Image 1 (cartoon, rainbow, N blue to C red):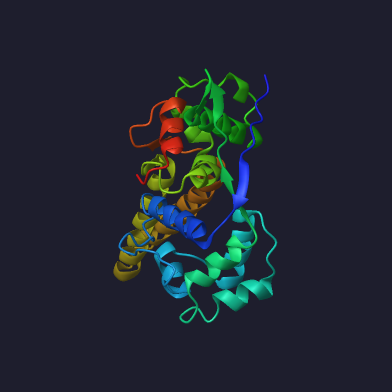
Image 2: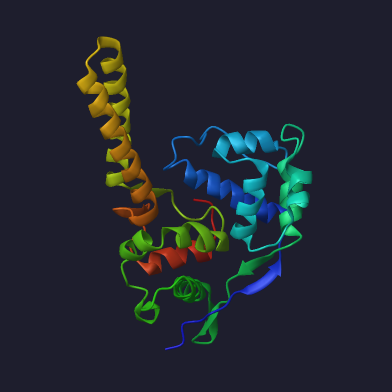
Length: 253
């Protein structure tokens, strides 16, 4: 069965790029304690405030990361020009530059019973994106297929290409990572053990703290890079049909 179902490319606008950045920040706040949920991104937001709100890296790494995100080849010098000095530059310049280099993917409706069905087109588009991401059995996905197993394995696809079809339409994500979370608590416990051991002279506590810190730090690295989340959920969406309808409607969640 043919799975490839490309979108229609239309010119992107700075407002579309801003909507994507706003949606990324909205979802990031659900699982990243360093993100600032009180910040409202706008074209007038400074680059410094944007970086602080989203816990972003320096300008060079940030520019290259957005090259990967948008699939563009903007040079370091171009990124530096619009990202530095961060307190004087604004998101408007970032959005204008990105919009000039990308297109906006638009879902093609499916012709059914003499009419156009946009949810069906959204379903086929989402399935095609999963196939492009490496899902070998994408052709077996049906509208009634449960969403959870695929959201768990392809969280970056749903939070990336799928969400960019209709920025802001997906419900807030809930990501459970018990192994990573346990390791973080272990690091905090190790720091307490090191502090208490150093203050009281109990060298055994210092040794235990060092071992625990090293073990838990390695576990966070492994969990973040090698383990799938225990679960990834988007509100009350349960099937691909639910997801397709939400994306097709394109309403702000």
